[in-house]
Length: 521
Image (tube, rainbow, N blue to C red; front, top):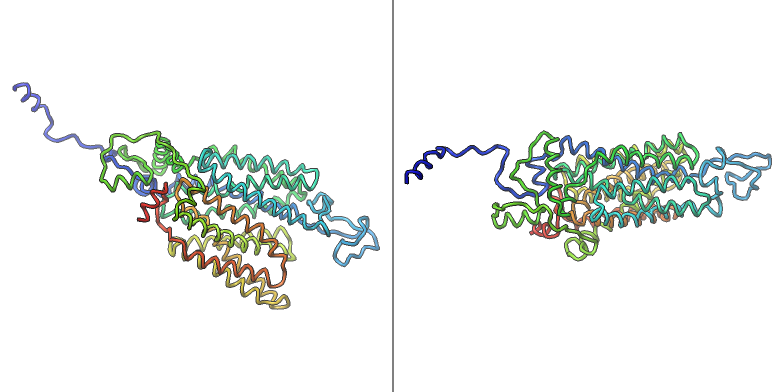
């Protein structure tokens, strides 16, 4: 009894103070952790966003290089009996020559003119076909075994290899094959870079940040104009536009982190938590010890049962992997996928179709491409400003209808005098609206699907966009009022489809299908 009383007297009158850095056991998802403890867009996210988004410039190099490599150079007569009426078709080969030599482009190197002119368009279509295949393949790999960063590393390496090999193509058909392979790897660059750049960003900052990734693509096109002006032979140009991919792997990617969301859904909770702690520390914040990271499905169950008492978090849970079949299996995501595919297809037909018309202007090609790239940037800025004010759905509808309206006006204009000028203005306004739509759809699509299938879904919609890119040149060659008419229908119908999608502004990025369904309940 005396010993018991003595022990009681040794007890402190007040319990020891709790450390302010410790929190009651709390199970939260990544979005909530970013908002409460790490910061939604601090110094870490800014650095990571810039380094990752630089890959968009590389995609611009490999995609738009064909504008310069496959151009038809100017020619001149070398004999007095040379009069082709502006065309070399029908002239004897010894009566004229290419300005800049035969190595200026693939057209002059392999005489892709007159009856063989269709081969230039074939290369473009084959490249986008490769992009379509690659988007699906790397969309799956980035959600599963390779991860976001691993997939981005692989596609950049393949781009560098295939791009350099293209410069040594001995003939046209080898060239086509290598462009197919380059398209295959290029198809994964944009979607991997986009998801990797935006997944560590908080929900209220994700929309504006996502729109900003496309400045890098347009900036890449602008830089490409300077590279093409410097290297005016197509073989040197392919090497010059491929080397930056190797530099990116060696100098930039080592400072890029894997997505914490991918770690989480793969069951690598410890690595996801360590990365979130790094983000918080870099942003001048602190992640309390009692806070544990979990997928949204677990958080929903925890809140539903008021279960805040759990002894420890499992560090190696079973990885959750999804596929396109899972997207189709769930009614909610199936409908979203169908609509997103339709929107991306229609938007791509208009975007690439109107872009091809710019190449038909009789101006300096290098300056023309530069101005085209710069002209898209105001569309990104305006869309980014309005994105978190009006929401994804109204903005998608508005920009598609804006583009569709001016394309409709363009289809009514003639091709002579002042009407020709008005038609050109309608085309500029049409691409202005669709540039905003085309890039907004990346953000919208990423927010419509859970983490386990986000890149798979983006891969599918990117494939649909590549199908639109393949079709666009065939629409352009219709001539007359038909191209603008087709673009108008695509824009107007696309806006009607967008009415059936849900709004995702300020909504969390769900990790699993069950988490998505719980969020909709």
